[in-house]
Length: 254
Image 1 (cartoon, one colour):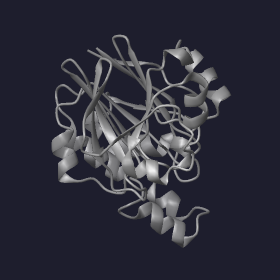
Image 2 (image 1 turned 90 degrees about the vertical axis):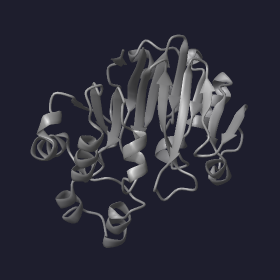
Image 3 (image 1 turned 60 degrees about the vertical axis):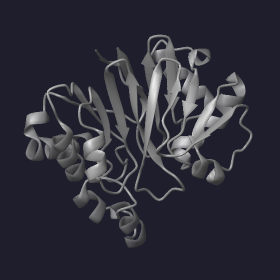
Image 4 (image 1 turned 45 degrees about the vertical axis):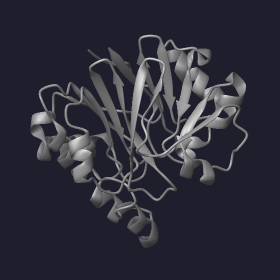
């Protein structure tokens, strides 16, 4: 069995937990040490139980809390060579570097990174495997590719970003430059793109699709729900929306 929980997902901070057997991995951390510990406690996880932190890219909403946590608990940190070069906080007690196509293992979990089209140095996301079960994260990308479709077939669980609603972004407070960055191929997925990709990788074994990384200014849970109901109605019973302000429940895949 492999389990996933969100500590928080959105523009103001991101962190995911992956747990299998006796291994617990923190994926990114954009929260303060105090807030991280508070949210871990709601999931019945002690900070000292975290075996490793893996980092997807260097943006602050994913990385700002990694250094303080790693120094406090002497936690090993894994990131790509490009992310390490772009990382401002080099005071990490135990750093492990990998390339975005280089798999590795942490305890009972095998990690298969794959590169992301995002405006970061060497951004990646992961397929996490424990035994025959596989879950994947897919956030912080401006477009999807055929490689992703092929790589992510046969999953038990998928976390995919629904960053913005196109109309809300167009009519919202952001200037044209920032809007173009978000809409671009190196930016973020909108709700329609996320729904279309989720349909492509859906299969009989896919138990749950978690919808995350919603923009605070350019999206709402209601907008995400409407989009999936319109563009992927067959997925309605499989989806759950992750929140920014609190941790999710554990999602277990077996």
